[in-house]
Length: 304
Image: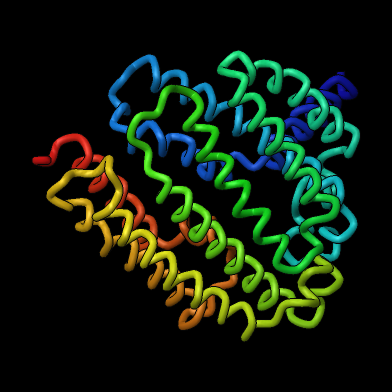
């Protein structure tokens, strides 16, 4: 009986460690798949909503595969990291064999299912997985290419949402805005890593030795201003938006969100990753929520 109890406890601990390693908190990044549905005016279409939700679920599991592979590749580096050492694989809570089995099983099951939603969606999902595996092994160690790859992953999420159904009014401007916002987040994360790890940064990620705080701050400033300009142009030039330009009313939420994040890292000295700050900082979370609500109201219920 004691051995059975210990076995059950170990299994439960492994499953919990596996779930944590799959990063369910990061699944929020995949909600960008709904962008095409929302901005094409089809959010209230039950069948298309269900189909896009299925695509979202598949992308969540595929992205979790990437996290499993990434943690397996970085297990030794994570053990020397001040915060990543608590991750299940690095701490020993999760056995590498279990993580590897899940990383193989999930794509074997869900990549074929992705093709049931459409050949294009299956191809994008497969390409995304291949690109992010390359990132885990090689690309994350190449300066600038690492953040461009992260941005590419976000653009592929948007593209995945556009091939689920026949899109009539989706604006290419959203690809530009997605790329710029992803670059902003990727560069901010590199800055956070440099500040947190200080002189030991090179031992955790090879690309960090080619970055510096001033260099990252310059790139972040450039991307921030370009993001604001690109989004502003989108709000009054995209063909799918109301002709009275009411979408421009959402620009202040974008400005506040970007400025709030810069305030947190430069004035408050926050070193958490952007996604963690989004969940932690109420003002930042509210700015994103208000932007989302305002966009939906303008697109679906405001006078055109």
